[in-house]
Length: 223
Image (tube, rainbow, N blue to C red; front, side):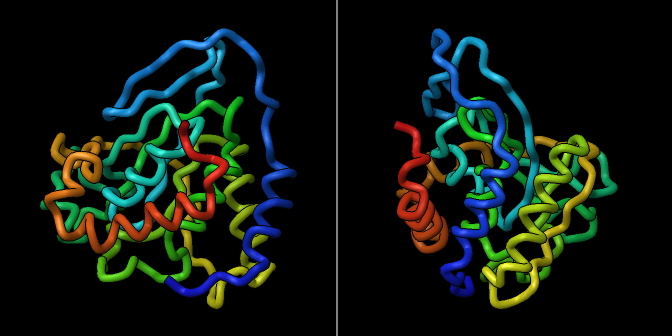
């Protein structure tokens, strides 16, 4: 991934401040277990959903499972023209789908703007249809918004980063309307947590991404 200038976090701080949601409250808490991780959730949590692609979904799932305020993460496919596609079909690049993660989060704990900070920091949004050695339209950088508010936040952050010069090249991330999300096969779910000791892709590709995320966003990790 290209080096990011020191303007990156300054630009994101300003944009996140402008787009932040309601402050945290002190409501009673309940516990929800998903993907072998336990998430503490306020009883009156403000749940919302966002879907995006930033390369291999094994990578993005592993990162966002560790983000405080995220309730659940599912890997799947969006943005294509084939109904109920299989992984094998998506890998051909002919279905039009991107490998995506669908994230349910508590907006009282983490607003969308902060989730998008992590999204832009943990993949390269300047490479068209490619992340590292993974190439094809299925690995494109894309945000699927569900309403005009999500669209505005995504576009504001994308445009702000471009103007700030946070990246060496223009951002090519698509910001497009959400249509449908197809959950990927069961063996793709919670992939990194279940296979990090077995799969060399986990060792050489996902581990560095997770370590980078934990370094830059230490204050946003689940306890």
